[in-house]
Image (cartoon, rainbow, N blue to C red; front, side, top):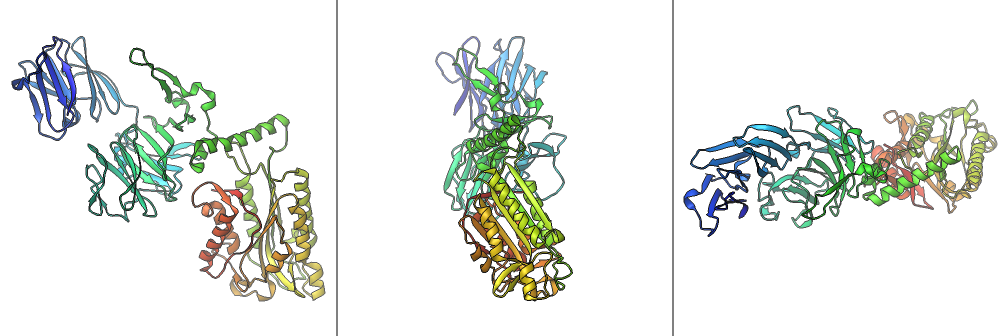
Length: 639
């Protein structure tokens, strides 16, 4: 396949180099194109070619380079010996330009630029600023959600780096913290995929296109698909080998990894970039480039929204071509202020598209702008109201009632919601503010509980926003007295039925307070209340029929979750330092309720995750009781 052609300065000779198949340069008569066979030069029989050819300005020397000879440049002098010298980088030569003064300008695909004498002496070099990711084929590692990437370099200093999209930080990679995972290669019989033109699946050849070479492989976590990186493509296949999509990257895909959640594919490419693609259709979402000093970096979307360190502000540019007779114009993205969006970039992988990420970030920015301009104590928008009641000591009239971790349950429950759900600069959320009240032990008397519920209703009424959500956790004992369900406060009097009914919080009383709250927003009630009469060794207790409480609060805006179903045991064990119910909620909030990594937890996903975690923790001896009356987004994921 003829690829490179160059006339000698006098026009009498045409040199032709070939892209592949034969490593030879043929000389033809410049007028008749007759082959001058005796003047052809062959440098070997390796597969490949000498695709770049050039004559010196005086016509006495012919230069050639290409894939047949790796990084070498060949030169032939008329009636003289053949000489070889290396180009300026460990990569294929992409161009040879001859200049006055017996000099040549050499470029490679890395890229690098070098000015040399005709004999190969270097006058100056401009090395490639790009990272060389060829060694990453087996060592690229990404987190389960794709937001943390570990990468390395092939230079003499070596070393590995970690980039976190969520915090927009580049730092030295920790030794082993199990946050990232290498490409999966097990589960499908894929062979001959590294550096060959004929990879196979179950013995059958995969179609990777003509003149292509495969270099990297990652199998999806569920084994239903796999991703192959090659010189020309990043291709997704189903498990039968059928192509799902193929993208043409800017350069060779040296390494590829698929996230455990199945949402993203991460590729290390020959242009020195790490790129994130949607696993379902191959759409590019983000690109990242770290400079050769291993400190400066730039991250951007295909639309040009970016964040960069000061040393990389002007690396990313818009380039506009103006035809063959006029130089292209360039403009750094930093010259367009609206493109600088560090607030939105961490949301792109969560939302899987730029527009949604920008929208969420804009809403958060607008809220904070209103707060700043008005001097308000909090930005506008919905508020999350949290009441956490935890009682494991019940006063001197309770007849020895006790629990081990109820107060800790309520404390950690309240802390998790306060720390993770409040919106802050650079951390958009569902709520403009989070208001928490924590009532442990002696602070959770009968009167204090009812007062706290009244205060929650007043705050929600005062906000005047139907976007508010109330979350109420009660971790205590429950008691059936004369057929009615009661929540046991700190000052419970167990000396008689009448004393107990008077001192406890009845289901109807509790429901009345919750109804007042529900007039101003959605209410989620989480009940971890055990029947006091069946407390046994190891902190086990029988749960009452919580349907009594659920029925009492059967309101359109109220959802009730209970720690277990009827006739099951609610567990709290030292290994968790929590009740199983609270531990399951905390696990769900920290990511178990967001298996696809959207960053947002819907109520349906929350209940599914809590039930699954309860069964895992208790070996299926405890199941979530639920009475759901609303749905929708409820929390952001807490990490």
